[in-house]
Image (cartoon, rainbow, N blue to C red; front, top):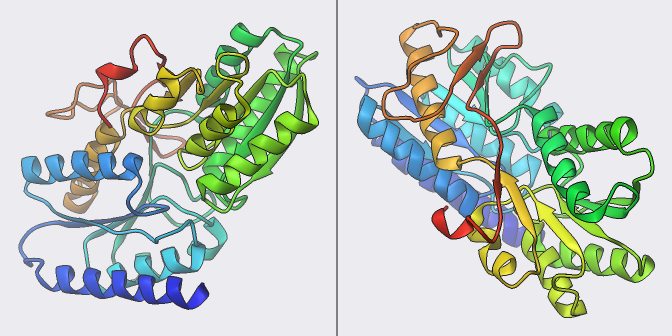
Length: 328
């Protein structure tokens, strides 16, 4: 299995090198390394980024690992640095793995930004945030409690334990539970390997161990299909409240079948668009205003100078009533 993944990663790097060679030298070149390649969330992010690249005359390339693997992500990040792109954006799988590479890229005069997930304590220049971690954690738990009641039992299923953004959302959920819902019981917090099958197993185990389990929260798009499948397999559609930070297309069928109750997220296409716009600004040496006007983007963007965060906006809640209005 490791040899297969290694071959896949090397193939991705070769592709990146070929595309990189085609970059013209008179335009700003922005590259982005997501946590994983090919899932609907990052596909939508790439679509928005490509739209911004066309609007602002930027050359853009996006490539990520085939699984949430920190070593593979690092190799792709370093390949973009070696190609000499102007800006490298990254959504870190493991911050500690990337810190030396970020410092090295900065020393070579390459701008490094984070988007979708941050690299706290690194030398990244700023973070393009989809929403504040606290707002996301509070929103998903408040929505859960409004459906389960404040004394329910819930389980949490996340992706890799090294992903800082996911851990921050879990921490916000736990803090909200402690301060606002002291009778709520979080029965388990499990971490997958980035596969739906592992999330399916954790969700099934949680329901089996806790017959009175009232809710399950998935802390990544990769977990949502597995949770929905587990609820369907258990025949508990409409009986257990399930939610996640998942793109509408990832969970639409489960929401419509009542295997998934709601999703909390943002528009990843807008996040991709904002990331490319921000990359162009930093490459051109343009400072952000407190409330930047981003041409082509309908969002209440804010620049938080002290935190070095460019904020897209507030979380969105997708339910059976509105999920078919979105396509990402």
